Image (tube, rainbow, N blue to C red; front, side):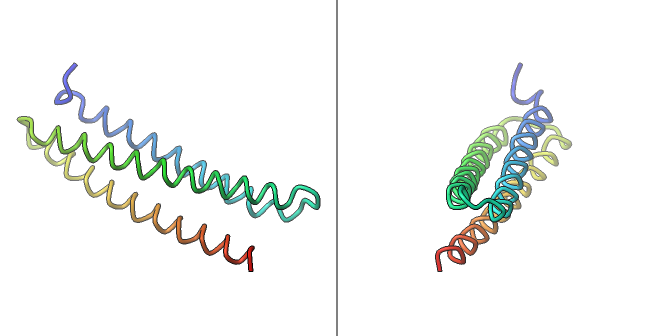
Length: 117
């Protein structure tokens, strides 16, 4: 199957990957918050949560950059008007995801600095 006939499938794959990124980020932030209830493993859980947050943010940025490359490649093909609209929507989605991941990075940095100080 060609990329031209599967634009919606490619968009759905990206949406699923980013949904997983947000889900893991939410779980790791909850783990970070919940770690305060433990006495012995508090620092270990906080470090683990912070590592998961950093890994997930980097993974989300890599997914978005790779998807942006795929969009650029598909954009060079002959596309219908609907496909062009889908591609433009996908481009804006990539920018939104990158902005939200940067906000998560800032949030993770603030949390880490508050715990270190």
